[in-house]
Length: 129
Picture 1: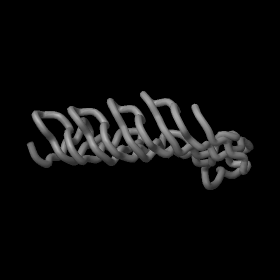
Picture 2: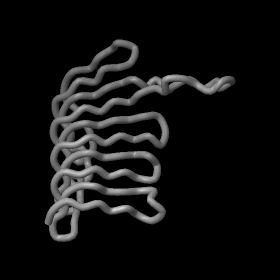
Picture 3: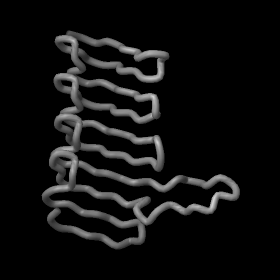
């Protein structure tokens, strides 16, 4: 029980936060070698409760909201963000999915229930998923 810091091999990943019975439990921050991170609540070693996951190993994606068993579950917002700039000579543009945002209900990692999806082009869908 209590606070602790775990650094995985070669310092490429780490967890800093609360522990209980040898497992991540309570408030904590996990950083993976990819640069992805989770800052929020843990229960029995899994992301459970409120927290924010940031994916950085490609186009930036962010989910803030409720979690259960390492998956978005409950109320939350997911945003797909286009890169701010492109390398010189790069021809690929962000996909249409970039800069979209969904806010609503989730179950087991998928949109389920009431929610609003705002598209980058200004269109919006509000309803059931």
